[in-house]
Image 1 (cartoon, rainbow, N blue to C red):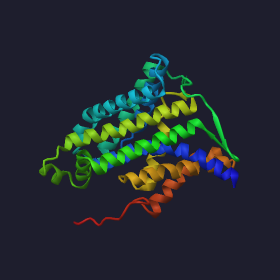
Image 2: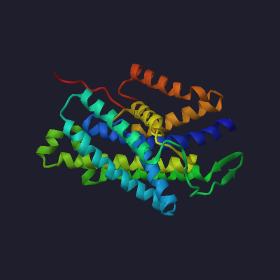
Image 3: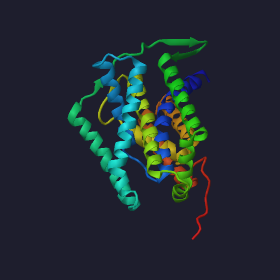
Image 4: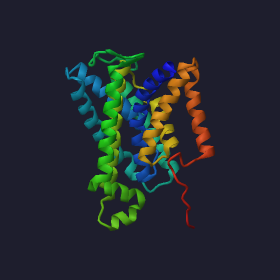
Length: 292
């Protein structure tokens, strides 16, 4: 039981990262029904911005985190304006191909500038173990969970308590009706991309601090895992993305703890397949009848 609880603690840290990235997926899909496969690469760029801030500019952890979040938010808006806005009324397959193209462009563009080798992230947070009874906590785990929870609470406040959040919810429900009510749909979509990319940038810095290594292709698998997390909770539903991230992180950690670390990715994809077969709308989603 102690081993299970210890792995549960580790799984919450990993799940926090998945949840932050999954929030961006689910927000964008909820607004414009687009699966932004470039989102994982924005997370990667956030990690490199944090690396540059701490290595070359001598910043501490929190300043580097804030700079990375602001930079990735701007990058998200640019990507939306340049790549996604022109094809917003095109077919879904066109949007999907564009998203994959943007993902590859970011990956290999970054590889051109920073090269392909793995970089060691500076030790901006000293690693300390905190023992409570039979359980051992690392201070990095605590930082990750606290920052993730704070960001999620801020996001919930924005969505449910501000005019911007009201505009986002109205646009997600019916963009044409929202436009008739005076809401700028283009501006709302840009803000959605900015917030989602901001959270991905934060996840990138947290991963760099936690694992102490980054590379240009680091966003591929976590991006796909975050998509799985969003599907588990119900893509387009923000609480569902949070739950899915934590569920997937804990599941992967438990699989690794019992000696099957080579199969943790297979387990994640098996969960995705089962979810799509049994409950395609996700655990928090509802089946909606479409009138024809």
